[in-house]
Length: 317
Image (cartoon, rainbow, N blue to C red; front, side):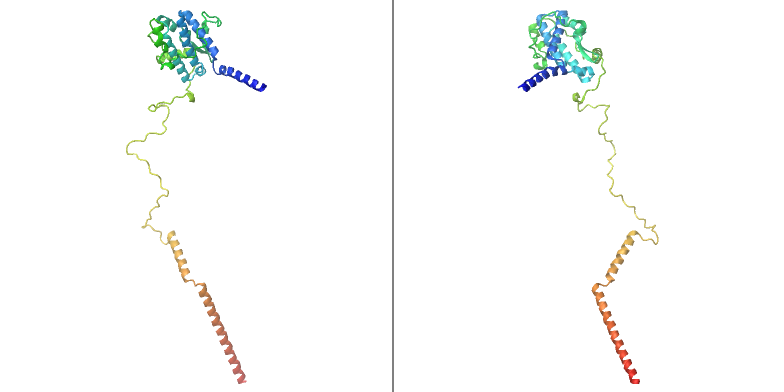
């Protein structure tokens, strides 16, 4: 029983500490969002309905970028682009909540218009540079402070701003129609990026790399296979396994020196002739027997002649 209790305590502690280690916790995010919205309501003179709607917009923005800010501070290009995309969406939603005069004052305050900056490799909210007392609030909590979880974000409405479709039912003010996007042009984007984060842009990481379209090519990357030259150029034929032998010059033959082929043919011919003329074993045996018979006959003749000679001598004596 004690083991199970200890295991549950460890799991609960990990569930609390791991989100805080990876990014801003939910409670901390709600607190920062409320502080930013409270100061916007104070400076821009927001109504209670505007106050609640601005809290939702700020919540969606902070919730989207809180896992992205570590790579933004490191200077990854993909993270910077996504951060300013989320920021432009947030500023577009605020256009339908704030009046044109309020929105102009909003754009003139950096701690509202561009609320996050980097300092000493850490990201922070600019609002704390203006207001130091983090425990003081001008207004109470929004009525859905703990219940709102991003239900009015535009991804739930076919990427159309929820406040654009509902502002006529809630507000009767004119809408700001000037340039509000930070990524409106490259010069404005680079200027704000340097002032916000002052980091050297680094190439995207592999897991966030976006491959180029098939029709696009990068000039700084060599082609895998160069183009084939046009014209009469043909692919060279494969080399022969055995080069051709040089032709014989019949006019310049070496006198008296037969070629290797002729020597081999002569030796083979002599071997065949010797094989034909050489007697077989049976013939050799016959020849040996014949020689033995002849030798025996000659011995007998010699014996008979010697006997006749001795008999003649005895007669004469």
